[in-house]
Image (tube, rainbow, N blue to C red; front, side, top):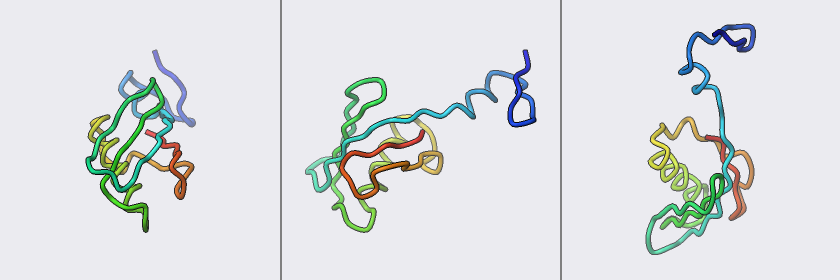
Length: 92
């Protein structure tokens, strides 16, 4: 079955999976003693990172955690909201 995709056509289920995005909420605790990602619910996570919340170091560390968890490249994860807040929304 073919589906329309921005004037193009999906040829199989893999094409659909590539374009479906998920938004997740992450509460970040920078300057923690250890680096970990805890799943609270289907779309909510808690991230503890060792890096300080300066110049985006903690945000990059959270992207690394999410990329390992979801097994996708870090370039496919975008910070949508909360670049200077502990509560963030990422697009995966």
